[in-house]
Length: 274
Ligand code: ADE
Image 1: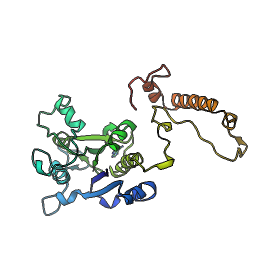
Image 2: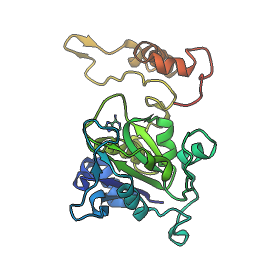
Image 3: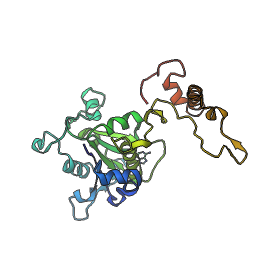
Image 4: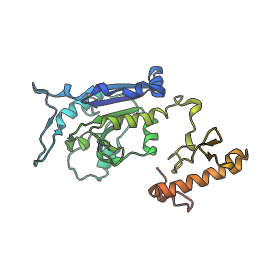
């Protein structure tokens, strides 16, 4: 199955960008994933091709218009209730739509149930992405990713189209495109056959809720610094124990947030997922 990525953006030339090279580029050539960049401006309806407007209530900047975003989204994945004959692919109810149905949102507007790929909007206001969510996305049919640039999105688009707001960290980018590239890169490397022998899967940072242990390679001594002796011992049990201890220690010191979620060394992870 091909992982189908569709990016809605004002800068379609940014895609596949770096994902056209190296591991992801070869996977793209093989057809392990597909990359379609859609120009949001093509869905503007006025002669100036306007995609944004001033913020309601005043203030700086511009806001991407809900009607233009909806037209762009519906062109790549029509709501089932609008054009059921056009909807293909495995059943998927977006988490935003589920949240809405369960009453988690305060909006009283009706939310469509979408069938197909999850729709993600890149925004620093979103839920921080996790490796667990990346794994879910990579196991699915693909993703539709909405990118804003400078501007925010009209908030109504999220509930109206079952859009999941996603952040790639507590930093502010000048647009969602680099965030979309990050999400896609993280998904693509998990697709079957993409990593090949290079895959070390569960040994990596976050795959078990901890940071990975440090790595070394030859020469044994470099600028007066040596490799930990245990790694030269050939004793696999001792090496595994050392790696586990370093993984735990580094997580506790560098990422106390992850360490607490993992259970702080008290057996089971506190919340199961990272
Ligand atoms: N757009 C701007 N900043 C962002 C961030 N941190 N995550 C996702 N999208 C963004």
